[in-house]
Length: 137
Image (cartoon, rainbow, N blue to C red; front, side, top):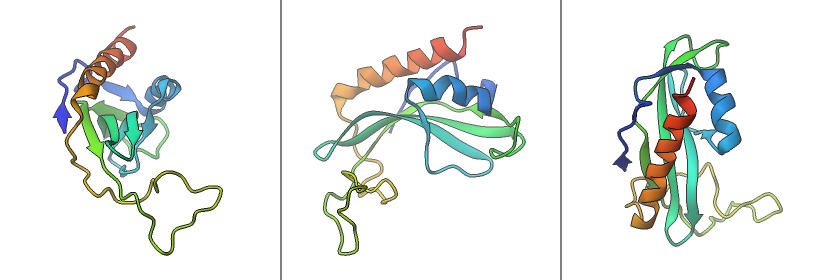
């Protein structure tokens, strides 16, 4: 994990409005959310050799719960992370039309894998893009 100090850290937003800004540029709400916290993820790269690299923008509910209308969230410090997933399928896995390269619900083999250096600059540029998008008004 590589932290990326950013001016977005500590800023508060309506969660719905934040989603409307981030989803069109490729961010998704990560799977590890709860009623009081979560994160937006942007996949930088993904392949079986290097794993899957993301920039993650964590947030914490400050007014309401994440599944409420008009929930206000406070942004945390963005960071880069790399997940390496098991490439082989187990006996009960499906290889049908809807199976992908990896099972998105599968636990990573190494969720804190080292981050390939060639993607660090791209991650820093994405953090700057977040600042321009979210702090302009």
